[in-house]
Each structure stands twice: as C-alpha cells, then as structure tokens.
Image 1 (tube, rainbow, N blue to C red):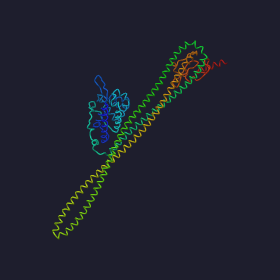
Image 2: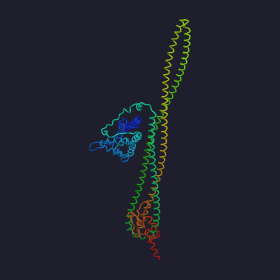
Image 3: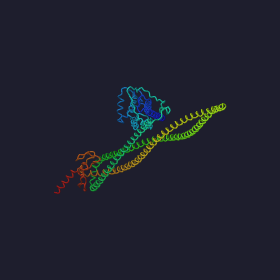
Image 4: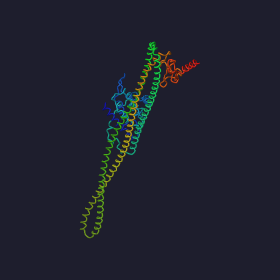
Length: 578
C-alpha cells in the first residue's frame, strides 16, 4: 500500500507538470480532447479509487469513488450545484460516470483542490469508504491537494453532453511522461511570454497560500474570542458562587444560633426530619447533576483544546512539506550555481581563443598587404624587364606561380578563420542568454525563500500563543476544581441547616424543583436569576423580590423575607404598637 501511494503521488506530480506546461504553450484554455488533461483525470480517478472498501449489494460488488464525493455536498454547501447537475444528466447511468462528471465540473469551477481538502479534513467520515492505509486517509492525500492548487490557473472548457463517461476505460499513457525534458518543453526556447505566464501562475499560488494563511489566522482569532468568552463566563460563575457561599455562610450562622436555642425540640420532631431528609437527598442528587453539567462544560473545553492541537499538527505537516520544497529549491540552486560556474569558465576559454584568432587574422592581413605590395613591385619590374631578356622572364615566372599558390592558401585560411569566429560569437550569445535565464530563476527562488522564512516566523508566534493558551486553560481547570470543592462543602452545610430549618418552621418549604418561576414577578429562574426561600412563608422568589430582611420569632437576627411578607409584618408591628 505504501509503494502504491508513492507511485500514485509521483504520477500525479508528473501529470500536473505536463498539463501545466502544455497549457502554458496553448494559452491556458483547454478542451476535453487535450491528451494531458485526459491523462490527468485518469490518474485522479486511480488516486480516488485507491483503498476503497467494497460494498456488497443484491446486484453485486460496488467499488465506486462517487460515494465519498457526495459527502462534499453536506460539508460544503457551494458544491450542491455540481451534485444536482450530475444527478440530472440523463446520459449517466453508473456511479463511475457520475464521479467523472463531478471531477469535470469541479475543475471547471476551479475548486477541485478546495473540495478535496474539505474531504480530507473530515477523515472520520471518509473511514466509511476507505481503508485506513488508503491514499486519501494518509499524508499523501494532503500533498496531492497542494499540487491541485496549481490547476486553478487553467481555464477548462469541457462539454459533458455526448460524452460516454460510463464506458470509458481509464488507462495511463506512460509515453507522455517518458519523453526528454526538451520534448516536454515543445523543442522551443523559453520566451519572455512563457516566463510571464509561469510568473503569473506562481503569483496566483502565492495568493492562494496567503488566503489560506489569513483564513487560519481568522480561525485562531475566533478561537481566542471564544476562549475569552469562556473566561468571562468562568469569572461570572466564580463571582456568583462566592456570593452564594457568603450568603450561605450568613444563613448558616443565623440558623446555627437558632439551632442552639431550639435544640430541645429537635428530639420530638426527629421522625418528621427523617422524611424531609429523603427529600433533601433528592435535592442533593439534582445538585450533583448540576456538577456533572459543569464537568461536561470542562470536557467541551478539553475537546476545543484538542481541536486546536489538531490544527497545529496540520500546520506542522504543511511546514514539513514546505521544508521539503525548500530543500529541493536549494538543490536546484546548487545545480544552477555549478552550471553558471562551468559556463563562465567555458566563456573565458572561448574569449581567449577568440583573442588568439583575432591576433592570427591580424598577422595574416599584414602578410597579405606585404604580399600585395611585393606583387605590385614585381609587376613593375616585369614590365620593365620584358624588353630586356626572355631568360629573366622564365625565372620570374616560376617565382610568380609559387607566390600565387601561397596567396590562394592564405585566402582559404582567412575564410576558415572567419567561419570559426562566427560560430564562436553565436555560442557566446547563447551562453549569455542562458546566464540571464539562470539569474532570473535564482532571483525568483530567493523571493520564495524569503516567503518561507516569513511563514516560519508566523508559525513560531502561533506556537508561543498555543503555550500561553495552554497555561491559561490549566489555571482555569485548577480554579474549577477549587470551586467544585467549595460547592461540595457548602452543599453539605446547606443540607444540615435545611434539616434544622424545616424542623423549626411551621410553614412548609417549597422544593427547588417545584418552582421554575418567581412567585411574585413570575420571571423564569436561570444561572443569573437565582432562587431564594422566604423565611416566613417558605415560597421561592428571585433576589429582587426577596431582598428585604427582618427579625422573626424563630430567627432573632434579621433574615431574608419576600416583599409581601415584609409589608404584612410591618403592618402587624404597626397595629400591635398602636
């Protein structure tokens, strides 16, 4: 399975490379008949089929890659148009044909990489369709998604009507990838237009990476805001718990004093208290349920932290891939540097040869001039000596023939030297062009290195923020544990005090479960609006409707009473005083 994954990933790299190079030569717009595009879809289909689970049905075994692609509609609402258009095509009768049509439409929308990234991010859903060692479940799937981002540069015009997608046989044509690098380039030199198109593609991929980085930063900011909200909620809960503890402490002091005064009457009401104790046990169980809810909130916070860790792991994986690309770029830079050095050395040698050839040509030209002067002088002497004697003419004729042979030889040497000079000049111009091209590529690679260093700095900052957030979460967990201990202690004290209070009072106290709204204002109780018993009538009120305090016969010190009881007791006191 590992070898299959590696082979498929290499084939995907080659197919995308060949497709981009051929598209740049054609002007970025492609049709369905384009051979590299057809081979790309075949390789993509093999990648999606790798590790698929076989589903058995009444008809037979089904092993189609359209099942996982249907999940994109649920995870990404933007893909609903593709799914509906694929289902509405009457020519498609098999799941394989629908999957191929889905790939065609996603490539035309320039969102094939985005949709597959959504699938790989939700691997718990993909486990229903793929084996654990499948390509889509491993790291190779994320690498292929990164390669597919480069295809957003292309404009694909594909017509699905009339295409027999159900019966097509996907066979990989290896002849496209076994050609020489010069054949892949189309046997043409790299022009300025091709370089400009490559630069545009790199700029678009950089923009895509920047958008992903901005999305990641926005997600981190949203998580920080959620954490800030959780902190505020924790502080509110802590303040409320402290206030409730203080109130319970005051109530316990009051009830303890009354308990000391009325200790003798407790023995007679022991049986009634035993019944009420059972009811209080039920209240205790409800309080324990509330504690479980708080523990559940704590578990949700832990899950959120795990999700944050998962995001950081994914970012680390992308960093590893970027580092690998950096190492490849460094190796290419070293190769280019060695090539430049070799070219410079060869240029120096050729320059020296050219200088030597120029010196030789100068010498030949000077000798030619001397020979021409001698010829003129000899012709003059010949004209003067023709009349004198024929003997001298015979001697001079032999010398003239020898000189003419030497002149012809010198002319031939000059022509050969001129041809060699022309060839050397052409080679020198070609080397200068290659040097300029290598300098441009090295400058582009330096800019990419600077961008990678910036990404490293951002990753370090994110790791530091993660450490700080981990510290804050640990502190919050400790605070929650301490609050739980305080709450358990206060609950035990409340049980003892309520047993005494019910024994002393003639009024029947309402249970906490029986009251969901305030007796007076009829507002619903919540975490911010707490329940309070009136010490006179035993009903349950909110804090605003029971903020008054009066001294009762059973409570020598002032205790909490509702507004109605407060007014009634004041009227009684005024009537008795009169």
